[in-house]
Image (cartoon, rainbow, N blue to C red; front, top):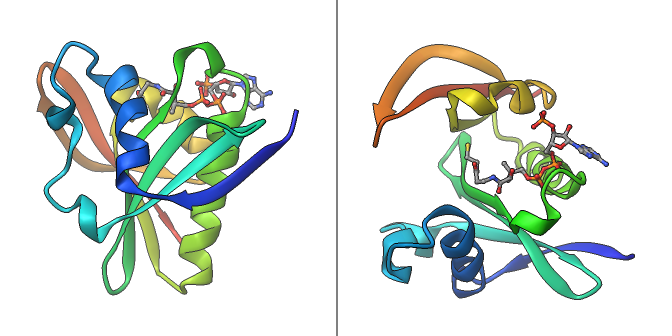
Length: 137
Ligand SMILES: CC(C)(COP(=O)(O)OP(=O)(O)OC[C@H]1O[C@@H](n2cnc3c(N)ncnc32)[C@H](O)[C@@H]1OP(=O)(O)O)[C@@H](O)C(=O)NCCC(=O)NCCS
């Protein structure tokens, strides 16, 4: 089993976003208005793309969004490898912070990567979210 993480196009991220997050909606539903400004990364397992994440960088901060691993491959550590990689990208860019809108039931996962919950929360589509962030050294 060989894994590789590389930058991919937004078009490559869409089928996994769609299949994992909103399979019952149209593919357009998983497009973000600012996708063109993002950097998209994919983890390939033996040349097959199985996990994707999108990074949106402003002057000093990076937000990651649309993090998804194909269901059959979840819980095997691949998403962790990908998240670790993009935290490294943010550090290399000398950014001060990386953050995300986390589903409340995913906060323990992000805590493992040094992210902490802020007091900023919201509800979207009946799902509770909290903004989590990590200040980069
Ligand atoms: C969130 C998501 C991208 C994580 O990807 P993943 O490939 O399953 O991630 P991992 O396998 O690295 O970690 C998932 C869990 O498996 C555990 N795990 C199992 N085997 C592991 C291994 N060999 N190495 C590391 N972690 C392992 C992790 O500790 C983690 O546990 P936790 O959720 O209890 O914290 C994936 O679950 C997903 O696509 N979910 C649906 C979409 C979604 O909710 N996106 C995020 C919105 S905030």
